[in-house]
Length: 145
Image (cartoon, rainbow, N blue to C red; front, side):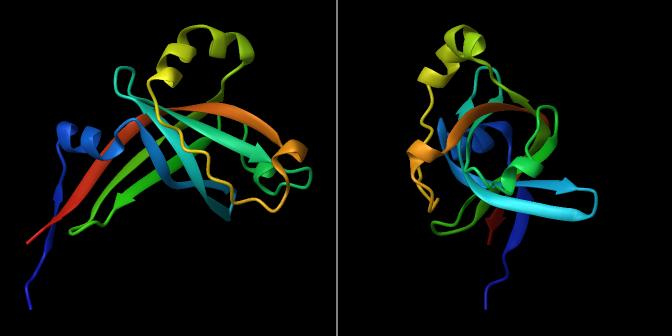
């Protein structure tokens, strides 16, 4: 049996895994209650910011955890062959309509935020909001034999 070890990824390797967007898991906590969900994200390498699209059903449990300024952890993984993972931790800021029309719009156009439908509620009955995750830290680990 071959032993594999975990090694830190450098900035180029982290950027390659993040690409311009994809899917991951975002986690929040409300005092002692954790909450984690799959999410679509976009990544802007120029500003090193993540953009998260959240859909809220009328009775959404997520609404209790997602607020402007809340701290979140975003985990992106890849296990095609050997595993790699990136964890970004920072605060979420809701992106308003004027910001979407301004500077954030250029970043968003460069990204690939997948539309992933995981809700039972029809999209027409949901409220969608865009958030920017400004990371305080971004770390990456990879498996090496």
